[in-house]
Image (cartoon, rainbow, N blue to C red; front, side, top):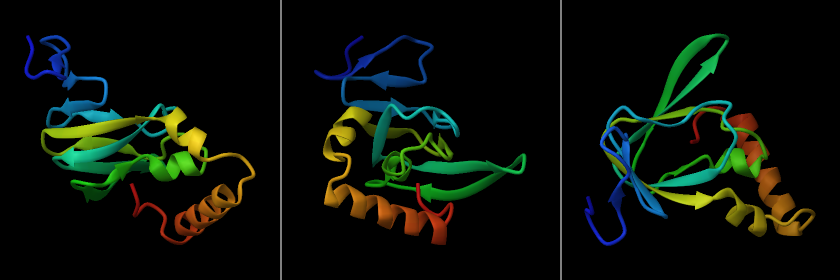
Length: 132
């Protein structure tokens, strides 16, 4: 079943609609889980996503992210796995950007990359768990 020119239903049991660049996640669907390898950075185009992280075997809800918020960007910059689980609060449309796209932008040993990673580490150390 075709919904628009670019978006098709993957199957009837799917939790999202799929295209090459965007996905529609239904309410209460996990976008990615803490500790999972990064394949994509997500941008919220519509909807709401809640971040959840596990610390000392306790689940902690953190922030609700809305339109325009990136998911997984800080983890990618710091070269680690996803540090939080992201769960949709509402049906949400997310843009997907492949990790390789950012990896090509973040050239090793370039001045810009070193500065960006340094700033990301400062934010991560000072404001743990307030970013997505």
